[in-house]
Amino acid sequence: QVQLVESGGGLVQAGGSLRLSCAASGRTFNIYAMGWFRQAPGKEREFVAAISWSLITYYADSVKGRFTISRDNTKNTVYLQMNSLKPGDAAVYYCALALRVTPVRDEYNYWGQGTQVTVSS
Image (cartoon, rainbow, N blue to C red):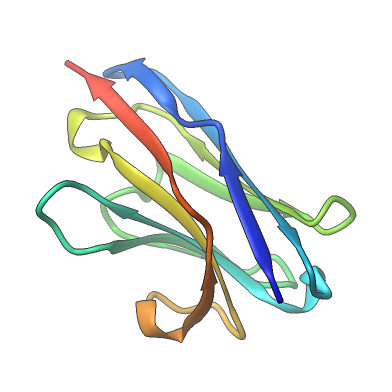
């Protein structure tokens, strides 16, 4: 069984930065792709970014140039560095595990519990 635990969420002013972390346990982490999704109240859960085991990355257009996904396979951890945050970035952020880098939510088999990001204007 895989467990994913996110951390690093919080309250930040618009234009500020946050770094989210997601620690994985239970499987050989470094062979899987990892992704970040987010869900705002009343909206669908949407893709944010993903990274393969070989460090290939993929971003949603809405965060390209502001967010950076990375991973440390020695620590079984994936990160999401979020800069130039906007009120529209406020959401619960989830990390998830998949067999390949993909923006398709249904291809992710394991999910964390989420961490709240709030951006004040």
